[in-house]
Image (cartoon, rainbow, N blue to C red; front, side, top):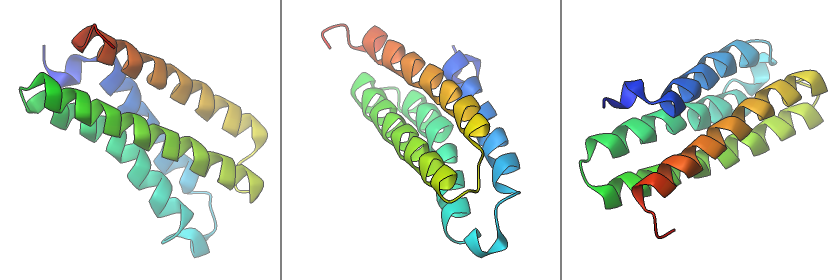
Length: 118
């Protein structure tokens, strides 16, 4: 199976797209601050899923999935910061975080399928 066929990768790519759309409404003063951090964290999720898949080693794949999960947690934190600063509405936060919750569960499931001892 190709990494691009993984539903978790596809959902993570959707998160990237929605992140770029959401951050387009942020103040220009955040271009090198919160906007860049949110975009980098979002991009890191599918990128690490793909890179780990391409390593052809279960240990390396698991490591990259762990990094993707860390980026997901970073992303969620940055979203909460954006809400506190008034850049996102609570409704937008709820929509985004329901998507990240789903991606997190899918990453956990993928990790368990690769490492049944965990």
